[in-house]
Length: 371
Ligand SMILES: *Cc1c(COP(=O)(O)O)cnc(C)c1O
Image 1 (spheres, rainbow, N blue to C red):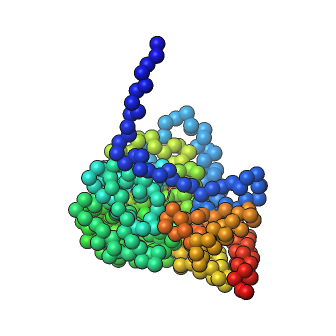
Image 2 (image 1 turned 120 degrees about the vertical axis):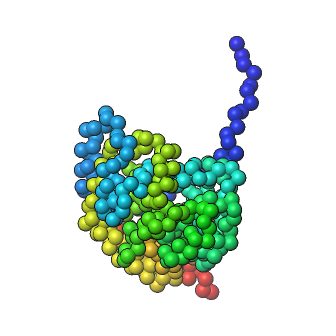
Image 3 (image 1 turned 45 degrees about the horizontal axis):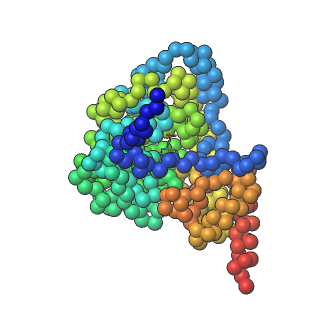
């Protein structure tokens, strides 16, 4: 028996406007000596203690994980001096971003973020049926006045990554507090995925999220802790907001392995400190080395730098030169920065390899430009 063709079932409005997330590539044909500097991963990997915890946790994989994440929340709270009842854990901080959009945005509402903001904000806003709104940045830096000007009565969420990806720049917490006060109809989400790399007394917005009714901070184990493949992130905010987010969270969203691994990772302060200090040292070295070779970058507070070229053509030619040498960096045309390349800070040998290849490329460029 044959059926007449049925009309396609249309998804909710907004869904077909989502452009698929582009992850940093990791292969170059069959090459085996590829250096992947395209996804802001920790070159030193995860802590040994985290890897041991992961292996131990596999013995319990026939058991459902706890739904309350109590032990991981307690460990995070202890390390950061926070109230564990105001922490929510997710499958990467991407899932926390998703919960926020699902719970607070929807048709007829607006989700605001910055011109060069992280691409998940737009994706999650559209998935919730909300309208994404972009505010301009000033010289690749978050512009608080532009965000305030772009906010309106329909604004429900404002996402600011601080430091931002892919620019590496950041704004003072006092500026973020000013934004939260100016737009009380919206939740300001401080995406602090790179907070661990900032050092000093920067708390990623934890104090603001603890004190103000409309500020939430998101954090991740994917960057400094080297657990990108394990998918663990968390959020901190007002009790009422965390209660809302827990209602849309799947009860078993994090596996036993993910929970135990993240707990061991956050407790290993030596590995975290080593990763932070090596990153700071090598980031300064690479930024200076590239600047010496004619490639400037803004002061970065994260584990990457945004190398800036004279034009799009030069950036693409440099990307090709890096690829020819087995080095994958991130093209950021999708972030409105086609004349830039985002380069993750690797270990010392990796940074030297990048500086060498970029130096040779720039020398060839100079030779071509001089008559
Ligand atoms: C990497 C990153 C995240 C974290 O993603 P996970 O889902 O936790 O892996 C969040 N925000 C920004 C700006 C990032 O660069």
